[in-house]
Image (tube, rainbow, N blue to C red; front, side, top):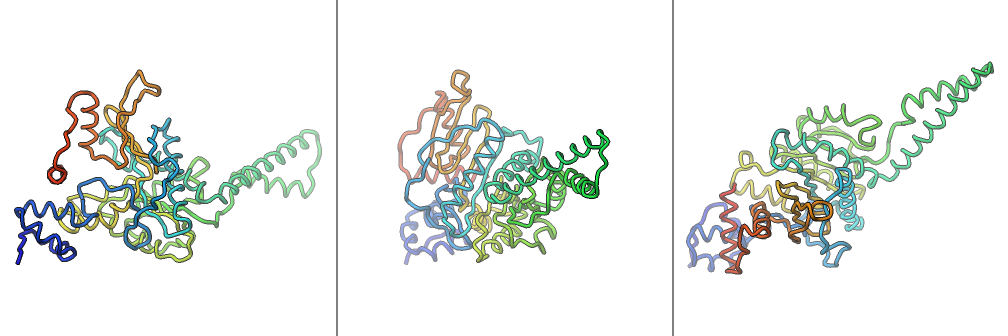
Amino acid sequence: TVTVTCCSCCLPLLRRDSTMVAPLALFSAATAHALLLLFAVPHAAAFAPASTRWARVGVGPLFSAPPRRREGQGQVTELPDSLDDAARTAAECTVNLISETGGGPAIRCRVDFDTTVGDETFTVLKASTEFCQKYLTDLSYLLVPDFMRERQAEMMRNAEAGALLRRLQEDEAEGVDPDEWDEKGREAALETVRTGGRRPWEGPTVRVYFPDEGSAALARRDWTGPDGVPRCVAMSSLGGMGAQGQDVSKDVAAVFFCPRASESGPLEGVLGAMEARTDGAYVASILINPVLVDMSVTGFGMAGRLLRERLIDGLVNVYYLRTLPWGALTRSWPKDFGVWQEDEASEGGYRLIKALDVMPSNPEVEDIYDIENGLQDAPKEGFGLLNAIGDFAQGMMRM
């Protein structure tokens, strides 16, 4: 009889895969625990970057993306020219991923945008606000094409009303008395100009969920109006009563803006309800800058690991941009990740120093920079098992 001494959080894993017991008996308890977490459960590698080749759909298990080669796959992601360019690219990548399902179950994906270079003056939500507004605008026009036509109709109504008012002013200047129809037309034209030609929108909506009702209320005040997000964007919150009692039957996508670990419960509730719909109209759940792993909330044990499995590990990185003190890391799906270094001699001020098909960890990014600039020797090929255990230990210490 083989006995493996390990912690209680590994018992479900041992029951799931009994073939791991005999080999693990050759190692110490600590080493066996590390090996089990690394290799027994593919999606329990809580301290390694989540694979970008998996997508969680509906409420079922993870499934592998189709093996066929996608357009752009294997190419390097270029840096965006501006904030507008980044938001537009992120929206296009999201819609491209949605189109991969071909009307299948709703996809889950994430968008990461961080240009703070470690500056913590503002919160993640505050630093991401402008990007989120632009992203929502571009995404809404792509997912709700009828609203683009409505916007064109609004501009036409506004232009026609303005032309009528100018004609009436010219008639009055020439001494022409307006008739009854002109007076009614003037009132209607004035109302059209006042509202900008806008009418209540009753079509499909893209709903954005804020972490709490306070941030949602601020967005309703600051994000609306002619220069705000489209009127097909509805605003709710995960905190308080914000996610309850609302009509979400017309929602085609849910965007979760900077969800935190403390909102993981309401977030899972919304995801479950939306992805259980059978009308086929709901197509995507999108998380922007999620901060769902917080050891002060989730802890180090099985609860935190299962949270990662349910909400994080299955998310596809449709867009990623993080600025660094010396460059940037970026990715637009389905292209590869690109590590860029500032270089005044290169076109655009940056040069590519590494392309990867999976997202590198923070230490790996720094190693890439050090190796490229001669500050560190390139790693020699060694025992993959020992290297994996070392990476696991470093991940534990970083937490």
